[in-house]
Image 1 (cartoon, one colour):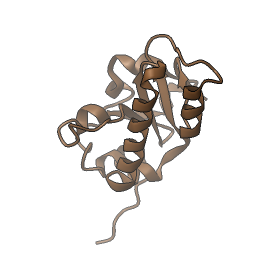
Image 2 (cartoon, helix red, strand yellow):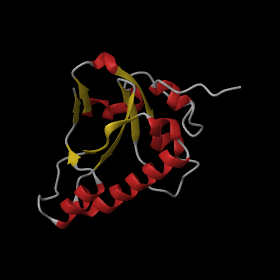
Image 3 (cartoon, helix red, strand yellow):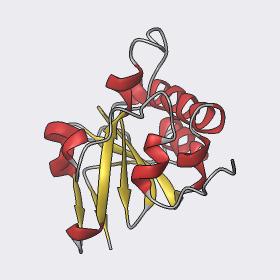
Length: 152
């Protein structure tokens, strides 16, 4: 029996054992943090997953990433976290965990990642100064804290 190619965000989530039962419609998987993600066309949201909650038992002692959502059947990944200099290393560890998890445990989600898939959404005010060592570290990791995410 041939495997069917995954085409939608929902199919990719359901093909990922760690989160297959965690799919939620729209942005409801983000809970109260759903207000931090906006889009020009909200009908293009395909669902969401609270990765942190769904993987908490299996990866209890790891720095887990928070959320994933689908927009126009591309996977996006957001971490809602304080944007303080003391938290930079934590968020970078979470991003590394996510990338490892995607390649080893969630290959179908990995295949449909957006062109720019990873976002750090700051909870509260940002306190990482431009030009600081922490700002450079975050930039090298390929993420930067932002108050919210708006997709076109």
